[in-house]
Image (cartoon, rainbow, N blue to C red):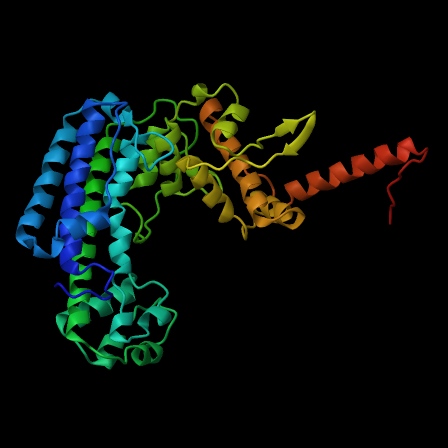
Amino acid sequence: MKFKPEPKEWSVHEIIIHLADSESNSALRARKLIVEPGGILMGYDQAQWADTLKYHDHNLEDALEVTRLARKTTYELLKRQPEEVFTHAIVHPEYEALYTFDQWGQYLFGAYSAYAKGLDLDECSFDQCNVLSDITGVTGMKIIRAIVSGERNRKVLASYRDAKCAKSEEEIEKSLEGNYKLEHLFVLKQALELYDFYDQQIKQCDQELETLYNEFEEPDQPGTPASEKRKRKRRKNQPHFDLSESLYRMAGGIDLTKIEGLDTLTVQEVLSETGTDMRKWRTVKHFCSWLCLAPNNKITGGKVKSSHTPHTKNRASNAFRIAAQSLMKSKSALGAYCRRMAALHDAPTAITATAYKLAKIFYFMLKRREAYRPLAADYYEKEHRDKVVRSLQRRAASLGFRLETVTS
């Protein structure tokens, strides 16, 4: 339990004690947000805490009880708060913007991915992490659970391969040849338990989210038809309820997932930042400027010295950029536009320009309550060609010439 993979790394024992302290600090931060909005929150050096407070001497059972009680009391406290409390913000020395309940929630559950990375078999001299691209997939998790349960036969472990896995059983079997050191297996077992614990916490959060989403009533006059319900197997990062239907009700009958590149999780992230009322921004240009997707012209002496978009930590802006990046290989009109911009400039510029268009579509769908009308795949190519032709016609006219279309 107190084995350290590296001298400067924490043992599993110290990680658990750290989680208990983090949970206590998170509980205090939640109370600070509720009681003292606008106040100042002090950070702390977690490495110094571990060293000075001698985490390796603490009792594990006490730490786990502290974690359970801190989370339970905070959960019960938050349930009793009115909605306006969740708009409170305080000053945090590690954040440029104000520290809100959104940042508080991200920090609280950010450890989930960290412990997913802890399910690493490299310490056992395995090559499975190089064979399986996702160690937390169906095949990887079956093999890890079997190893923790005591299975050592490589053929049996390889037989847990899922039918959709790209690698063959022979490749997986060969990658499982290695050393089963007791200390490494123990660390793997602890990492798996922590992974399962946070997975269970996320499921409980999904249940609470579903309860809150159910408070939105069915729209009397929906702006767009609802998405067709299709029975699809849930992917591991998706919520444990029908998020698409919930977002449709929340948006007042507007299906924002019809926009290319925007899936349910992306729409949820954007709406959590912007809300559904677009009247907060006078025009779409104000909205895109708030997202830091519009050029930031720096003019000196009447000349534009720079027009780069400013850096931002705006979650909605980042969500639009990620959605735009996913369109790079799309056969849609937006995908063609993104590729053309990448050829003219570079990939980052193309992603920003496409994110700008996605934000405009998002804004107008909510503002005008109208359905998304996707353009033809060659729309932007034709538009670009027409601009080039008009430019050539003006240039020819200024030189006394006239362009005529060649008919074959």
